[in-house]
Image 1 (cartoon, rainbow, N blue to C red):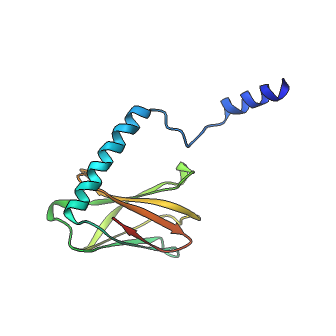
Image 2: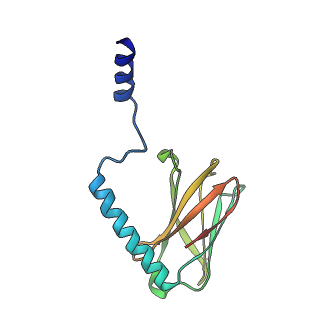
Length: 138
């Protein structure tokens, strides 16, 4: 009986970061993300991401130049279980096939990486294993 009361108190007092509050919106977002990924694949947008743990520099080198209308890009890194460690940064073009930015140091994890333009017309993603320093993003 006492254990049941303690368990109920823990359940109500502890936030569960892995459960989303709005399943319907989450489902719509998954559909939209699939469309954005398909657009990136159709346009041939893919590349290699390099992460320098010492400086926090991230650089994406695309396999071919981006479409001229891509505009500024955003890089998002999502921790698999700790959403308070997620990071987002704007990328700065180095040339037509590479962009760079800076992030805070990443802890050990298999980070989800997503890159997209502001209007989210396309999206590429991948996984960045830390420790490590590079990932294929497509």
